[in-house]
Image (cartoon, rainbow, N blue to C red):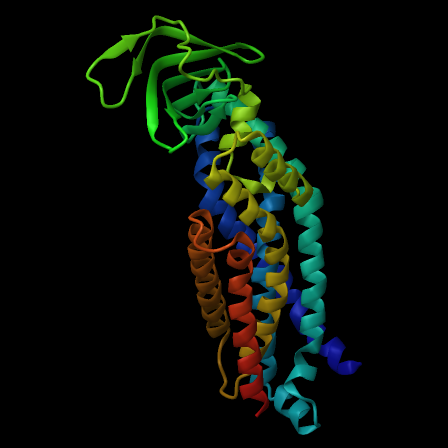
Amino acid sequence: MKIDRLILKEVIGPWLFGVALFTALLFAGLYLNRVADYIVRGVPPNTIGELTILLLPAIVAKTFGMAILLAGLLAFGRLSSDSEVVALRAAGASVFRIILPVILFSIAIAALTFVFNERLVPPAANRAKILLIELAEKGGAVTGEPIHVQISDKNVNAILVARSFNLASRTMSDVTITTYNDQRKPTYLLLVKEMAFRGVGDWHIRGESQLIIPGNAYVIKTNEAWPPQVPKVTLSPGDIMTASNNDNDVYSMAEIRRQIERGKRDGNLRKEKIANLEYGYWLKLSVPLAAIIFGTLGAVLGIRNARTGTATGFALAIGIIFGYQLIGNFMNVWALGGVLPAWIAAFLPLLIGFVCAVFIMWRRNA
């Protein structure tokens, strides 16, 4: 129908503009300083270009929903300012019928986002991670965050924490391994200055290490011999990187599910890591669905009686996105802390947005 073509024509242009705008902003905020550092360090331009291209799919997929929110606000803000919405309402069209093309377009955007996250983002993110590790190795750097993984044998559970992990030399430094009994009370602390990977299931202690028994005043010096009271570290450097990785962009939904099942079966993932994977699994669905909520919310908020400028649409879009991210961060913390199940934490912001969209649509239709 002519109404649908008119509205879609108004929406598609601002949506493409929004994708470009939010992609540039997110890339600048997340990676621009790092790229500038690589340029200063003399990293070849083709490597920087490849890294930039590999980082873009994950960023672009996150902007699809934001862009449809902005597009709805701008498109219907203009239609309202030119009294075209008033004319459609006078002809008997309901608010739902007027915004229906945007809802359908948002569903298509949600499907596109899901395909991006499942097919394009994981291989690109994995390749980008490898490039970043290679650049860190060349610069003599270590991984950004401390290593924190669970290790165990048949009788003893333990947690390994390392201040730094160098993938190039396959070493860990300032390592603390804490063993626990059945009551989850610490039984031994093994302090190691440096550990080196020598082969499958073989991490070697370099230099002097200390075995501490909590509650006792003495220390056992092990002198590179692995104490029998502490389970050996059998994880490979790759397994450690997987266990310490919190970026779910590198996995598809099926891969996340396999990580969760294997972690629960083998017991080598911490409870917090499993919770993060479960939350990331449901985000693979909630992020695409957010495009539908954002599109509907942007359209109904864009229908206004007073004449408003483009700046109002931008301000509303930024405010809604900020509110969504703020609620999402709270949900993430609560999911990792076990306060809420992961699926509730992932979908609750969408439920709040859906209720708001329906309420505003009802008020606009009154």
